[in-house]
Image (cartoon, rainbow, N blue to C red; front, side):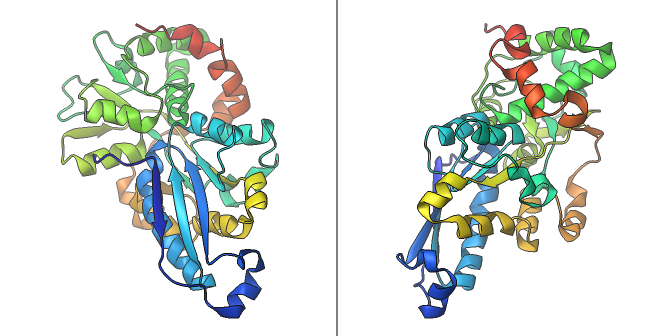
Length: 342
């Protein structure tokens, strides 16, 4: 997989079209072009590379104005912390609503009801968690319990910094709780699983690199879109395994209110996120192996690339992200108790 810079810039070349555009968008009259920063999580690099080009064309056609879109990627929790610490994101497209909630709780960057501002709880696409194994599946990995077997090397990122890693962790925990009977057994299972993890990368893309390029591990716990991208880019070197139970991942998006109001970019930032729900936006979502959330046309078009899985939600299994974070990912909580570095 080709390495990509943390910040990717895209722009359209043209001049601002006349007085009507200025009347329609008065806050932009001082500048011939706009800049927008989308702070996102690791595996969305390719998705937003294409989406940014499409939205720039849309914005140019609508307003006559050039748009320069900058992109920042990293572990979702780390990205949220960067915004809280002052990174000037116009929009945040993070891996989970819990990371986005932190923007409200720590500094009031967004309102408490941010998730009600866009359709589908501000999640324009969904995903889930699957396994990637070496071609031919030499270790015979079929389900979550195989990841806790002796002699299996598991690659997954750090749930303290990565949103994707939290989805991985909770999917494994719920599988163990249902199969083995209760949280105490699930905790023992998770200790065995994480005992098989040789390294914790800070984000999902780092874990993919460790598995695919550095050749470490027998199995990668991965976003569904990341797994399919590996298959596409590496020409059959890997197989994707769908476990018997997985989690409905609902990455959420929001305007970062304090920043857009300071920078005068609210109109373009809001339009940017709304365009993810457009037919073109949903088609791009499906093309990059995310599950379109609202477009029936895109859902039908890309249905064949998504296996039917038995999925549960964080709300149903763990009482929501706030409770799950407190019990599993806070300092001294369950993850800290079970994971011992080698």
